[in-house]
Image 1 (cartoon, rainbow over the protein chains, first blue to last red):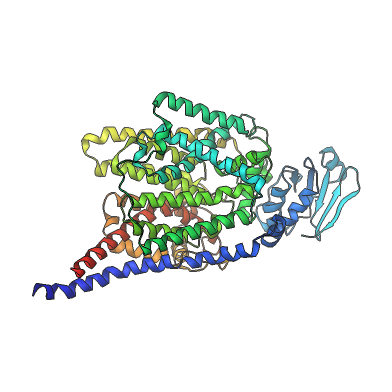
Image 2: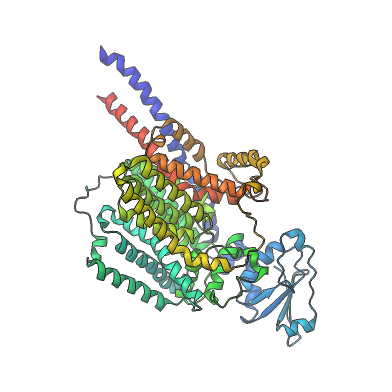
Length: 161
Length: 475
């Protein structure tokens, strides 16, 4: 008698206890959602060289690495015309050009945001560059252009990221 | 994928970190057998990061490049000193506990969960080793600092004083950059692919520690379920493999919390010393470490007054004092140096009553809600699946979160989340999710360790109920 009374109640409790556990299983069972993107990336990059992988995943980084590789490690670089390249300069140029000394400012000024960056107007004259021992000027006007200060011949005239 | 000639050097760099951690573990823990062997190995990694970063910082601050030989000499010196004091064979560190219950065979369900964990971690490891640096902050902050520490020294570089470079947050702590610089030092050249060998290890070590901690109070399928959820979490997809400091902080602060949680239950001194040492590492990983240090210390203090008998208060307050001293001492050289770095125009303003933007509180609440509930972020990548609604449901319908010691973990989470929210509400930045979605995802990841433990306990409660009812039904 007792058994017939408790059995349905126990079943209901069993079903109720199953619901939250099922939700956890749903979350654990969605593992493929987190796997799909890295797996696709992996398949796309498998067997490729570092250069190819960098070109595919972060082409801007590739362009700046190529630029850096063509300059001597002790170069001192002044970057001109960076307007509109806030992310490029602050996120990539300084990283890839290092250990070369690079700057975009005559006065060690930090540009706060892209808006202020777009008003950049710090063109140095040749005498200032020479007296401050800069060896290259990199211009971002219509691509990347490199000019050597001494000797004053174009070193790396045209490169487009 | 790292070329084979680099592979041995990369392996050596990781082994040195593990060895440094093993020395610290040997020095601090008198009874290593209470940890499983896998757990001991996993603890060595965050301990090694915490142990090596500060001496490397001091070395660089003194004007010396990070060199392999002095680092090895330092570890050797500490190991010999520890042995001279303890006089116990280092082999005990890897000894199997003779009283350990033999492991039961896995059920099909457990094998399935294990497959998810291993599969997800392997894929993340391979992607970490295959994908070059592809992250804005990774370039601008963490890897840039690492490159400076590799090529130059803290004493000789002009990085910290150049206003122009303050965009890269010159005052941010240096544990992660120092570790990247260490890997490149061992390799012998700057290798911005090879340094990422550390990224998957951060995640693997955290998954192991989470599983081992959960196993202390939860059934094996439950511990596996929570670890599978962590390992497959889509939000970890990018942050585990990019050059940022959030997953390392999750690992180091998480392991500090796991030790603190053990202390809250057992009041073992070695647990709180381990925790103190690890939280010192967290303080040197990100500024957020300060919030975590405060939250952990406060909860540890409260636990004494809530749960310990009055006669124990003096002894336990002594433990807490030791915790604060070790954590503070470990970070003090950095704090001294940090004060010499000019304060640039930072986005974070001081947390003062006048800086609080009260009108932004609804926006903040909306952002927190959106961050937890959205399936995909602004970049079209999946975030948490249904994790947060499920966690909230479990917290509401389970008993454990309301009772000691699990309420301590809930309190750590609440304190951490409130402090991060307060810091943000004092900024001048937009608090909408769209303005900084990646940031909110990263903060949430760092907040996960305490909530994952409570979640595991809640699932275990329902699991036990379900099992008992099933057995009852079958009878």
